[in-house]
Image (cartoon, rainbow, N blue to C red):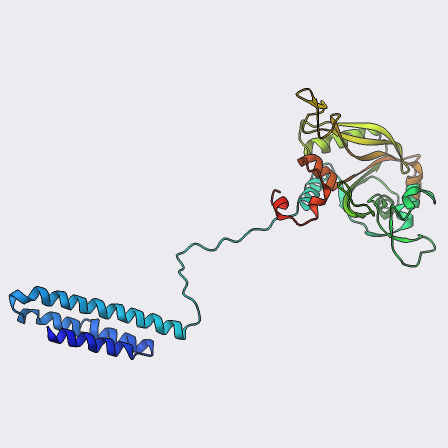
Length: 347
């Protein structure tokens, strides 16, 4: 019995002096191995009197447990001193990280592009920094037109070109109409979809200085208003839903004749203008303004090198932000750009 007590003190002293993992391993073998001191003591139990064997066995088990625990503690202390790599339990689940997603404008641009690709339209891209000629003159807008005013267009402080005029940030994607006709050397058919950033110095709940616009252009022989309305109706049903309808209202644009405003039926009141006998708070009349459209003006076709006596076409333009607002019921265009993740995560 006394030997067991002495051995516990000896083991604790030996273990406490260990400074290397190999020393810990050697002591573990010497004490707890098959031929270690614990097993040697266990073999001596036959020499212990019967009335003392139980106590002897209990003290021996406590000795073994104490040595095992002290070996583990000393090994852990040495690991902390020598190993800078933290312990990793590979069986634990990984740490979840927040997932990013596409911006809702990017999602809309891709969706709209796919819708028009199905009916043969080709996505194109033209400069954001544009010349006055392509943005105005080629679109039948004479000098002195209100759209050319500094309050409506962001001009760039740069030398004017003798042919193309002043440099500016493109105020609309319609400048791509002339460029597309010239790219094809005035030889239709043309089925163009142009989605790009545009710039106008406005900032309120429905306008931002930079916004995205979608431009469609179709030029070929025998193109008429029925083709225009059919295409827009197809787009409205594909993007907004099969229950949505469109209508055309007479309007005026310099680059189309005749010209129309395009409306789409309200998703809240379904075109009725009222909900439970009360005026719809979103549309007030059953319809929401989608954008502008019309048959391409003969002067615009001529500027693009297309013979208006042989070919005809239609064009439309609408803001991407406004399209999204009409689909989801968003009431402030500034939500898109204020960086509020609570809003962006909804999409």
